[in-house]
Image (cartoon, rainbow, N blue to C red; front, top):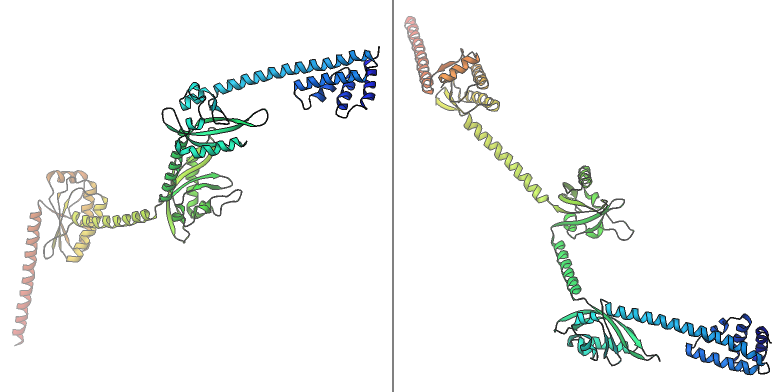
Length: 522
């Protein structure tokens, strides 16, 4: 009996005379006989053909080999066996392929049914052939209602008809194309859908239709429009803000990630100057505009607030691009991630130069008003009342503190010096309490006035006040005291009359002496 190896050698030798188209398969059969494994045959027959065509080619090569070795009838058995092994392998592979295709189809069907995207298939005429539950949920038509209908006529309103027809035309030409367009639901609502389209083919390569998946993005579109509108409003607000909204992050230095256009009015420099582009540093840093003497205050205020994760407020000065000094007020806060790490600082800066100047002017005016009021109060609280030539009075009312005590003494001295008064009446009727402070004021006033050559009369001492003075052990012996202001005035009048009488007598005596002297000379 001829061995498979010998049969293989003979088959190789005789295949040389076979047509060139058949020769590779005959050689592969010889190689499989030599190894006892059909892999060589399978490699050839599976390279281009389907399984059924490969099966037929194996039968053909078996017959050709047996014909070539007809003079060796015993070669038919080994040839048939190796071809049968190859066919068994093909059958097994076909079964596995069918099993995989079945599983794949099951998965595809499951995906088709459970996909959250509306999924439909349409043929080359636009007729819907498949329709999943998500399509029913989004558009409202059941599969029974949708299948068999023209997709464009069922789903597309007139406002989007031209756009969708162009997309379908592109799909039927064999090119995939996605779209976003208006659609209509069963209840007549217009919705916006995002469509993902793929081309379907017949087995011969002709376009069979298309597969589409879509989602209702109406709310998304509305949200995007609302977001754009909100961003536009925010941009307008930022442009109109009379100040600077900012966000900065720490690199080597604090660098602006965002800075509103108001920075131009506040600093004289455009926002682009403070923002880094790519790896390039910004043209200038905001911190460099702060006056050197204010930088430490700003730095410490911000650093402390960020460390405590609280808001900070700080006021400082900058040098404007035109060289002027501007006062700025800033409020900001740190932005921290979930781990508590500082990511950025956000805040707002306002130019308060005008307010600062107005406050300073108000402060100066307030100080001037207070000074004028204090001067008026001094005059009211320590009034000098002329009684007659050479007599003045100072009625004291209310409590007397150290400041007012000094006023009393200064006013008395000025009044005596200005009027040339010889008698000064201090009336304490309106002083509710005489304590050491008040008593010392009276004594010091009397001593000061006496130094100017005037006499001090103390009037209005009530019994309880007299008792207090005695209790304090004060010596008022050098001050004439009278019960009332009227008594003081009467005393002053009497003294003035006595002094005038004395002066007149002196003058009359001088006149008599002068006449006597003249008579003696005669």
